[in-house]
Image (cartoon, rainbow, N blue to C red):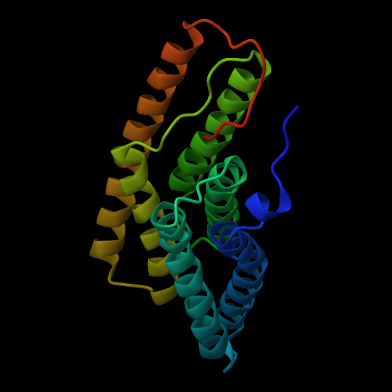
Length: 204
């Protein structure tokens, strides 16, 4: 089994992705304090809100920066291809679970988004175990959905007018279903192909 060398593993894009993963607990904590302070009427809620927004911006920038650096320097690695979707799913799942707990988003949207990511991960794992090709690239619908998911999180912090919020939730739910169907269809297609002789570095 071939292993990546340290110089290949600890590339700048991979370090940026790792930093994004490490920022998730900080965002989670600041958001919890923000909503608790909002519920109790504490004066510090705006400080927590500003902190959560700043961390969110860093997470959002790093989400595009790691991919840009990897492509520009031709440093795309199996580890980076795995860490990037893991970072996205960790942020999305933890954020939506938190937001629904504080009733900042509807239950149906959180269930839809979290279920889609969980099923997608299980499908990827199944393809891996059965030695099928699991290197599925993000679709356009998947990329658009991820952007809307980030917008939902940001909107929950900034609390925009109700009509915009409901439109955003509806569009996000529809695109989540469309992207989920696309990945499901691609997964079925991969499962009809000949299994690989051995497992290797793959991406979701």
